[in-house]
Amino acid sequence: MSKTQYFPKIDRSHKKDFKPISVPERLLLGPGPSNSHPDVLRAIAQPPIGHLDPYYIDLMGEVQDLLRYVWQTDNRLTLPMSGTGSSAMEATFANCIEAGEKVLVAINGYFGNRMADMASRYRAEVVTFEKEWGEAFSLAEVEEALATHRPVILAMVHAETSTGVCQPMDGIGDLCRKYDCLLLLDTVTSLGGVPLFLDKWKIDLAYSCSQKGLSCPPGLGPFTMGPRAEAKLSNRAGKVPNWYLDVSLLNQYWGSDRVYHHTAPVNMNFGMREALRLLAEEGIENAWERHRKNAYKLWNGLERLGLVLHVPEDLRLPTLTTVVIPDGVNGKAFSSHLLKKYGVEIGGGLGSLAGKVWRIGLMGYNATPENVEYLLNLFDSELPSFRETLSSSA
Ligand code: PLP
Image 1 (cartoon, rainbow, N blue to C red):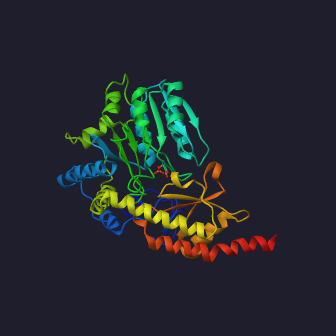
Image 2 (tube, rainbow, N blue to C red):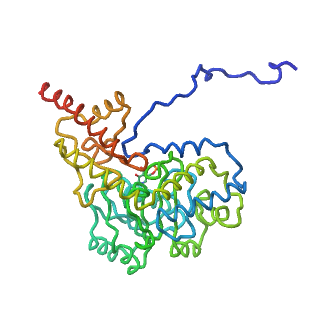
Image 3 (cartoon, rainbow, N blue to C red):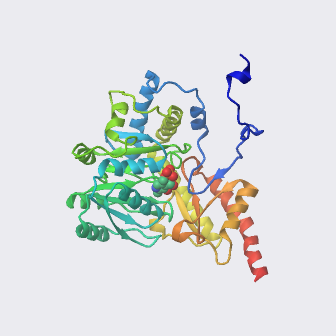
């Protein structure tokens, strides 16, 4: 049989002459992803093995233990979701909400809104309390909202990537126990870079991502659930309305049974394991200190250049700094210039801060004094011409 007889007629309209991939080198100093550690990239480039291979099973246990370490939790149900941070965010709501239950979301930025949207899709009765983008909630404000709404879950963002605010967590866990609700915390921009004490803070549910403080590419969403949330999951009247993110099914794979659920992205977990190993080798408290020191260096340098930071110092995130775009400067034109000419990425504002701030990330592998100096030099040498364009055209 000839080839033409065996195959039906081939449509060649999409077959173009593509070149082999060649990704440009970038220094990612925006809101994420951040650059991956070279050892992590080497781990991901290992040949894949089966997701039930004994070597991989051991590695899964290591990933879980290391996640418990960086989050400072003893939670049994701690695992990386196969998906980005949003998949782990969705897992918290999918597993712990039943239709009609009240979820209270604290909104002081873009990601609070995303949580409210997700909770509503699981048919929660969503109520919100809000602050300006750039402010944090006081304990009294949290208590007032809990007392007014009496929710089953309070959802908060620890590190608001849209604003650069770090939400102080002292006392909020106790309030949630007092008002008998679960405390859910988004730690996407804090894990690995900002002090986090999930058990001490009495957090019942939390999630994060791989691509920021952990120095991995995007693709995994660390998830953890404490005993109170586990009890809520066990007492559900109905099934979790999301098969892929159902933690009771996932735990049959991540727990001792090792029952197939989905084909795990094994190479991403090689990367995650290596990233977490590197963090443990550095010591999580040393990583937090490295982020803090480099953030101070960045803040002082930006202020010396006459720039204004959007968030008061006591609420600033070390991992994400919002810089007010000076009047009249086209912020997008400046960030495009840095990317095109120097391969350096910084972010623009989201939502109500769009066009008003730049967002500079110093996360994981990228939180170094060399990167801070390099970026400050670029602001020093390149920004004046963007101001000059303005004054000469005025
Ligand atoms: N929550 C916060 C605070 C984030 O910054 C992000 C993403 O940057 C997410 C959730 C969603 O994570 P992902 O984009 O990995 O899905």
